[in-house]
View 1 (cartoon, helix red, strand yellow):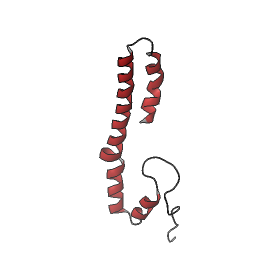
View 2: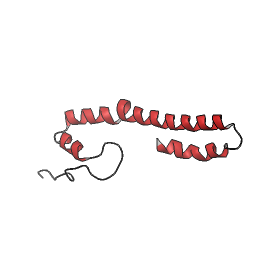
View 3: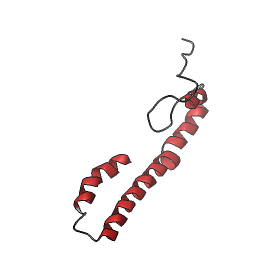
Length: 88
C-alpha cells in the first residue's frame, strides 16, 4: 500500500509547478486516501482478518501466537515475548 504511494510520489511532485495548487493538493490527498483504502481492504475484508479467523479455527496454538505477533506490519514483538517452542 505504501509502495503505491511511494511509486507515485515522483510523478506527483513533478506536477508541482504545472498544476494549480488546489488541484495538486487534491491529487496528493487522493493518493493518501487510495493508499488507506487499499490497507483497509487488505487487512479487514480480503486478507489478514479473514485469514487469521480461519487459522484460529483450524490450528491449535494459533490464538496464542496471534497475541504475541504483529498482524500486518513487521516490528518488535508484542508484550509477552516471542513464541515459545511447543512439544517436539
